[in-house]
Image 1 (cartoon, rainbow, N blue to C red):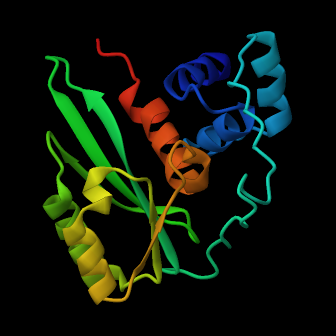
Image 2 (cartoon, rainbow, N blue to C red; image 1 turned 180 degrees about the horizontal axis):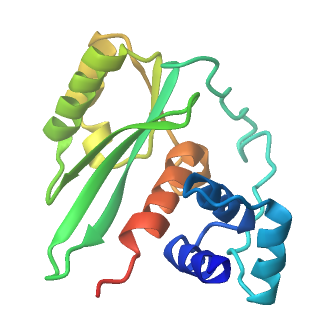
Length: 191
């Protein structure tokens, strides 16, 4: 019974290892420790995907320093897009907004089209709910670099931090969340 439950959870949550599966079993009411789950995990030849090494770099190629990380809640937010398609081929765009200090996703806007006005609407609602951050980090998508967005953010004294083109690791918190969102939600098979 436990073995089949472990297999079912491993199939459902493909990115999780035996420790997360142990935590999920405990939430479901199983009285089991991680050593037993690890033994069954090995016997069933289950594997979590290997982690990729993080780049270790303290400066950019031009000699400038990597920006300092967030120091408190609402200090630095980051945002970006995830794209997917529906079962009938229509494109979906998801705007994700992350508080870098808490690593909490504070908004996901899903629509077929997300323009700079939609980005501003999402940010405006978040500013009313959470407060105004000191900085917002993003890549150089036209929705983030439009004159309207830059002028509006400058007017309310939010500093925009645009990453170096072709360097997604500079927006690491958002990229990491988007990868997890894709693996845990979007890349699931449809039956």
